Image (cartoon, one colour):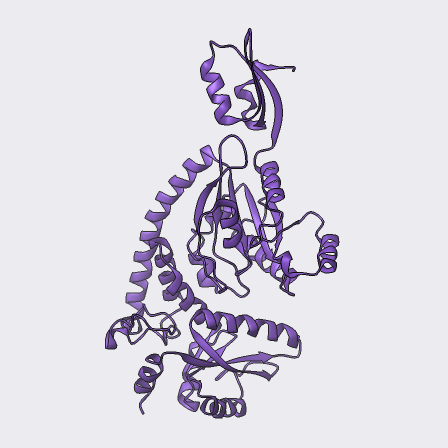
Length: 431
């Protein structure tokens, strides 16, 4: 069977089966490697790939030519045949030559963590902006690497609609692009994104003039979309898969008085996020960069939660959002014993502990958001009847606590954003 015939056979399968591979150096902790591979398995599941085995080679440094040792490669070839696996997925990024050598010397079909993430992003991009950004990331990943196992035969066999395997989309023609054409396409996409970003920047500027902005950030699958839905009833997809949400979604949120704030759900972060994606998604992440407040959601039931907090903060620093005020929200406390929650309280006393799914402590979260975004105060206003427009403005800007019609005007006790107090200074009175 030729190489191309083998790829056609694999790609046409209802379910692609894979074996995961990683290296463990002397300085590495085996548990960290296992945790990373567990995450890789979830990535594979999101891409529609079934994992049938995992192997770790203890080796001080990757082999330049093939990443893994020759004996280990031969063993993997035997295991693939035994387990019926179609492909090896490396939890590390392979160089183009390493992938080619494993194919040539051992007949091993390979992909890596970066390519898997790119494939997931490709299948989950729905808006024009996200599609352009994903394509840009794919092109920057370079032609020798981006073989796109599950999509590169589209032009041969047509669209694979209804397939249960990983996503289809980029097509065989991408493999045939030379470096000049790739550079031209990158330049074209950059120009399209620049024009699109100007439009989006204008929209964001208008929103900022009128609303306070809060942005939900966090590690992938932390429960950001569930929280977003609990706060706004937006109906954003909630799915127990990595990167279920890719396109950012914004919606008005009423915190109880005055004008709404805008809250935005964003794509989840992940450890070792391909730098091509970080670069390409800077425009999407502008929602975080330009926010007045970040709502950092953490899966408190994940034993790695402290590590995940650090990973998210690392990405925030990389995109220039580390100085923005942040609320730490530890989610999924319904899955934790009380003793564990108490231990977390000692380490993160200012965090908010919630269950977005059960809507536990959501009112307290809203109050905290209000304190950070609105900075409200309570005042008494006496507005003459002749100033009916001011009364109407007060009803729009303030939360009404008490209203009384008096001889000399309308008395209002209101709660209002400090920034808006200047609008009513001349009407402030004692009770």
